[in-house]
Length: 427
Ligand code: 4AD
Ligand code: MG
Image (cartoon, rainbow, N blue to C red; front, side, top):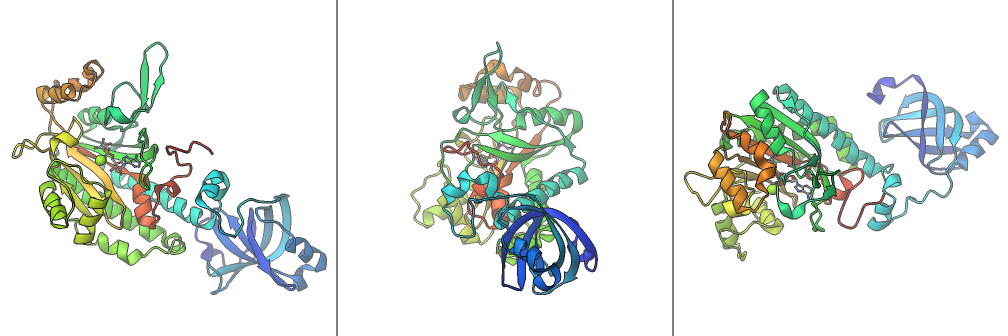
């Protein structure tokens, strides 16, 4: 539905569901769900007659209906409008709908995810997600990036051998579910200079944290003739643009989620600060973290840094040993790579990982060997370093983590329709 306010004064016929109902002996207020919005409908006994009013009063939650009536302005109604009911027809009955207005535990709701999606908060979150996905595509489209769809079944390890889902692939041995589209995206820059992909990615990560999924959506961009700093410039523009566009299109949803929108807007008002990994370690040491140069920064550490800066932050140039094989060695400090992670505040943590790529044939082959990766499956990838290799960079953003930040929803399981986690494959 476009803007419902524009329909004030019109007679409408709507199809949808009874989300909730309350009222008295003279009036019933139906919350009617259609097109993902919750519309207030008022049924008056005097107007509809005793029999019809009684039928309405005894309707169950989630009954599907066709209704008609005039749309009137009403400041007190949640959308500022209210439908004054003329007639109502039952399409499909609903008995004993399991999710009632009372409190349910998360496990119960997760088991009923197929129904839980109808609830107010879930409607709001998935509408924000949908808008954000659109804005992400729009951003790259406006910058003339080509959308290159990368495969989900792959023959080589994309990110790390430790977190692969594998499956038998005809007579050709194992295939893996893609952990990233990056390596394929890198092929695309030689044809189109600027490419992006946006799709599901898979990690068999045995982590039960609030930011890990086994299946998540990632948008990745790859740019030819682009160094690490220009790559960070692009990420900065990208993240601030898609957040601000999404906010402006989803204010009613963010209000339902009780998100402090001003706080979020303040985080993206100015370019996002950039600090070096080494300085991040020094800062954490100062805050009594037991951490040494060379260690990865965990969620608690990330949180501490964003709290200190009161801002999202790019952490640059991590140690080579803890990052993926394809990252380019930093010429001014060979123990590090030219990369950056974008860390979001408010407990969200890493939302983007990006880097300049190693463009030298021998150096990247050496890294593949160092990591013990099966060299023969990278022949095609190594070809890219043989035929017109160029400096290039890219990054990947985890969609659910950004949805969770924008919505102020602490756990990523609510930020995707059907979360796949270590202990959950149903529904
Ligand atoms: O940092 P990651 O592993 O980077 C890559 O995959 C690169 N190939 C991207 C690139 O340069 N083209 O993952 C990128 C982002 C993370 O910052 C995080 O937001 C998200 O993907 N992510 C996850 N989100 C939910 N559940 C998980 N298990 C995730 N693992 C990574
Ligand atoms: Mg990462």
